[in-house]
Picture (cartoon, rainbow, N blue to C red):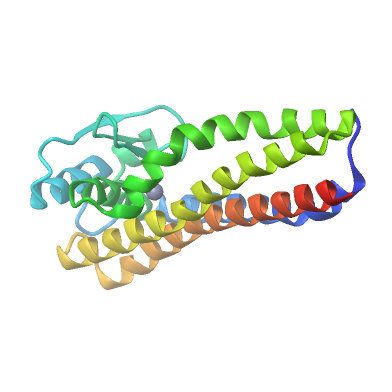
Length: 224
Ligand SMILES: [Zn+2]
């Protein structure tokens, strides 16, 4: 397959940043999934008590396969926790469960960036699939209109990546506040929660940087 050297030069830093962020979140998760909280609450218990406290009774919690596959699904109002979070009483599990519960609370309180993010998801998904084929077609056929169409679609993807940042940072700050405020974790344990959640947030920053670098590449190529 043909690989453009310019693409490697521009996209490589983003790729490396992404790999570094992934390694960091795995490392933090590994470290703090070995240390139990003094409250002894499992991930599902942490999420349940946060949701109950906030009166979010219409949110269901279930277990989902995979590692670090935890997420909140706004369409079905379901909080899905991975096995290592769901049944674990570790600091990492408490942090991640509280973070996902934080998304459910964003949904409940009508937090605008989450609503905007959900609205962009379908467009961003289509954009992600079509960007590269359109771009390469435009590149091979030397049709700049196709390249501009790809860039237009890609700005939708970038918008999605950028709006994800406040959503994720806000869910984590809600998580930290509610965990320490309720006494579910101690001040010392809060450092571990922060380490895991900050590392996870960095993966979203890395994804946004990678997308911006890719946009830069598209623009540079379109100008030639
Ligand atoms: Zn999140």
